[in-house]
Amino acid sequence: MSHARAVGIDLARARTIVDRAIGHARGNDFPPMTVAVLDAARRLVAFAGEDGSSLPRERIARGKAHGALNMGVGSRSLAARAAAHPAFINSVVARADSDRVPAAGGVLVRDDDNNVIGAVGVSGSLPDDDEACAIHGITAAGLRADPGAADPT
Image (cartoon, rainbow, N blue to C red; front, top):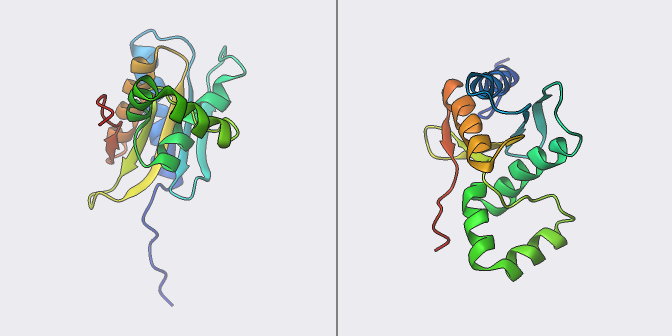
């Protein structure tokens, strides 16, 4: 009996994303980082919080990844939308029981056919640094990173 290979973020790739994202942070002397990797069904596949990461970082990292998946755009786009339309984004975040964080650092993960197969959320430094760590980890795992656009239109 043959089993079809599931397309998505498997544990090996998710671990690569986490390790390389944290490696990028260490190479750039960023503060302690927290990284969450979710599959397209929003299930946590891999997670790591460095020693010294503050307690809220887990919720923030997961919130960035959840927001990207739930809204279908990287959190850089959510941040731009929040700046352009704060009432709308605030109502979306409130309605979602704060499981969406509209700040850069939540990056969609796409396969070679442009399908969303998951998202990575990183928290610990400035949003641009968080996003750079996520992108570094995703590309190191051989996947495509989609951080979203800074233009809300």
